Image 1 (tube, rainbow, N blue to C red):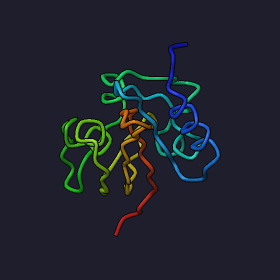
Image 2: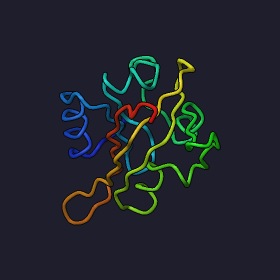
Image 3: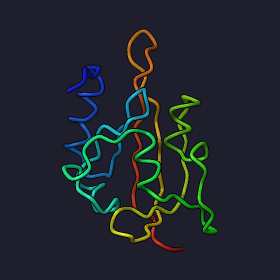
Length: 131
């Protein structure tokens, strides 16, 4: 197993204890964890996918806007948190491994460690339903 920053390990522990769906990516953009509530929206258990490289997870999850247009990687909230290192909120559609579309609201946060070390990003999201 590759070395992980202690803050990423602790963030994973926290995510595993929360009832909100959460995705966690490291500073390289690799998807390192998503919790059980996220599995229901993603359509796959984390034990099935394991950690995914940025190229893999960008292909696995189809992300669209409210008009059905596929979001380019740089327009995806989690990618923006990684590249711009700023929090963001958005409403979008996700189609995971089960091929079911879910309208979600997402809050994405960059993870910054002590001394300003960039560690990755966390997405907290929930089903928004259709309005």
